[in-house]
Image (tube, rainbow, N blue to C red; front, side):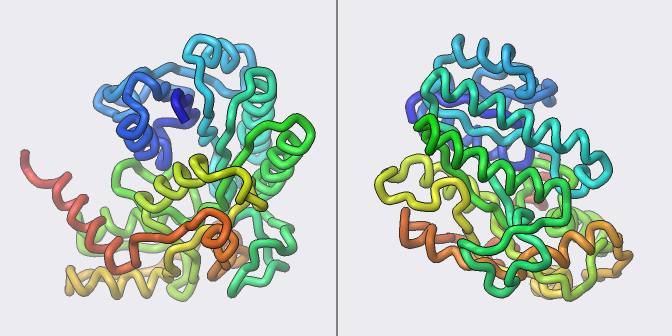
Length: 319
């Protein structure tokens, strides 16, 4: 990777990925794009070139590619699970319409494309513990439907046109750098901010809802490592399971109490998000990623908890 374009750069993943990519290949070589201009101090805007871009508009995307001349696109723009259930048509248009435009431009300009998938690509009929790399995928959310279709589209463009497409099935991602974006695992980010600020949190999932999780630093590193991997070693190029640890709301509350003994958690279950969570894996098997390109997480749940608390406390402290 020498020159890179990132869509959805102001989102939860893009915020940290853009910073890491600019450290890796140079600030001017990474064009951050998003549907709207973020705050002036946002890393996507402050650390290098930024462009307002609607990736569902192919002409806008093609112009940005011709002007920046990237060899790689990290296509992160998407509507997440809870938002997608509120507006399925918008999720379809953004998630699949945007991906089609990116793939078409990549075909014409010979670009490599990273597109994230998700544990949402699985459904209630999938084995949940562990969820295999290759298994039945019948999701029950619009977000999940778009992720399965996205995996297949990327496979098609690779096999039919030779586009170098690659992707990961992200678990729930935990980060302090950007607010959550309307997903079913948002509770695992919100709980830290509420714990530090107020000492309590009301969770929208049941206390025993176990889901696969990962600290954002590992997710960013995994994305870059996959794009740098030798293509000859990749058999599951567009849908690698990756995992780090598993959490329940009750379990994460217990980890928080090691640092904040008075922390309290209560529950007000959202039936829509609970149904989505109940259809997702409790634990996924990422042996293929470990075998084919050497994936290995660095953060345990305990290390993630300490890092998150330190970062949030630091952000709230007087300058």
